Image (cartoon, rainbow over the protein chains, first blue to last red):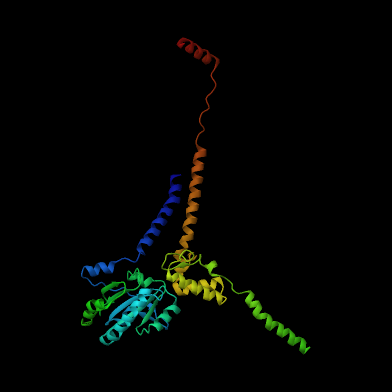
Length: 181
Length: 149
C-alpha cells in the first residue's frame, strides 16, 4: 500500500520540481548587466541572431564585431522611442564614419507599423526585428526604449534604461570610439 | 440558347460578390480578443485597454477581419507578428503541452489517492456492537443502584 502511494505521488512531485526548475531557469529580465557594469566589469554581450526588419536575411551580433554598437530596443507604439529616434539618427551619421553604428531592434511590434515608423523617421541605421522580445529579455530589457552599448570586442560597456540623450552619447559612447579592437 | 447561357453567366457574375460578401467577415475582433494576448501587458487583449500595443494589435486584427480572413488565419498572422506566446491558450505540442498534461496527471493522481483512501476506509473492522445485558447482570445493576440510593 505504501509503495503504491509512493508510485503515484513521487512522479507527480518530480514533475512539479522539474517544472519549477524550468521556470526559474528561464527567468529573464534580470539586471545582471547593470550589476556587472556597476562593479566596473564589461560582460560579454548576449549573442543575438535576429531577422532584418523589412529585408531578407538575419543579422548576428558578431556581424558588427570590431565596431562600437548601440543596440537600441524600440517599438513603433512607444512614444519615447519616437522622441528619441531623431537623436539616434543624428548620431548615426557621426558614428558611421568612426567605426560605430546604431542597431535598432524593433520589439513586440507589428512589422508594417515598424516599417512605417522607420520610413517616417528616415532611419538609416540597420533595423532588426525581435518579434516576441526574446533578445530584449536576454539583454535584461524591461521597457522601451533601452540602449545597450557594446565595445569593439563585443562586450557590454554601457546601458541606458530609457531614452538616450546627448550627455549619454558624449560621456558613455564617445570614449569607446578611441579604444582598440 | 446563347441568350440563356449569357443570362446564366450574368446571374453567376452578379451573384458571386454577393455570396462572398455573405461569407465575410468570417470572424470579429470581439471573437478573437479573449483568445490572444497583448504581448507587453501580460494579459488577454480583451482585458488590455490602456496599452498602445493593444490598440495596434486590435487595429491589425480589424484589418485582417476586413480582408475576410478566418479566425485561424488571423491567429496565424498574430503568431507571425509576435510569436506563439501571443496565443492565450498554449500549443498542444512541445513543452507547452505540459499546461494540459499537468492538470490531467494531477486529476488522475487525485482520483487514485481518493480510491486508495476509500479502500482503506472500507477495510477497517466495524466497531463492536454492545450486547444486551443478561437478566443476572440487570439484577446486579439494580442491586448496586439500590445500595447507592
